[in-house]
Length: 369
Image 1 (cartoon, helix red, strand yellow):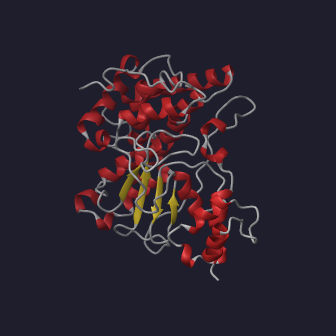
Image 2 (cartoon, rainbow, N blue to C red):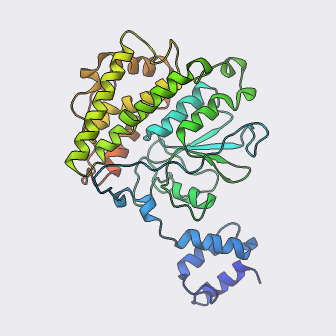
């Protein structure tokens, strides 16, 4: 008798399956009704059961995030770090990979920008989650039909956490976006945005038109400078705003917020009289910095208490640079949704904003050129 048959009989009989006495009927019903239930092996059944019963709320619910002893915020490293390249397990192929993102998330927005710049939209499809991240983490539109969000087209998952647990039922990290998913092996290839944008930069060059293949956002001659700048921009600005916002002691907050503005002062000098931060061309350094800057006045000034200065009134060179990228290069504007951005932070972080009221300003959210 198949596992699925045993489960259905147990449910119909009003009792838990004797082989799995700790599982409630609701869990068994969920497994029995899955599309693959008729062919589930014992091993797969055990895997499905573990996915539905293990408590992962500490990984999905941001309100359960444990502070450090000194009140500072430490971001965990990403766990899936595979590359896509010829001769590897993950070959560059058309319509093999799928990108899961949030418009709200700056890390995910990096990947959307590079995907569009490199002409990969027809090669790698993308799915956008709802910005309202609750106890179960990022939801798909099937659970929360927020405007411009999508259902999961591959697995009909309800939340991003379902994808992680499908890839690894024993996964213990946070359920983050972006996710680059391989449809052939049915697992996560990579969930580190800094690596995904480099994958997009070169891995699919043979599949895109020559003009797109020629675009290089991590050129060899500028890599040392880009790497150096990325490091302190990440620590001081990209992650710095989160260290400020999620600090749980005054001393941790003040240390973080002053590092944010010291780093912004440094960037301001870099950008005086320039359109790009490294060399005289658009690079990944611009993209990685821009996704934080475009969120700064609408969110980080108020929500994360980064309020020593605004970008629009305190940093003229950064402000002009950011507006030029937004208004002149469609990949930046098309990858930005301010409704998702503002809603996510103010609605999702209930330890910071328990009323979930989303502020009306700034007006305009980004100024014209």
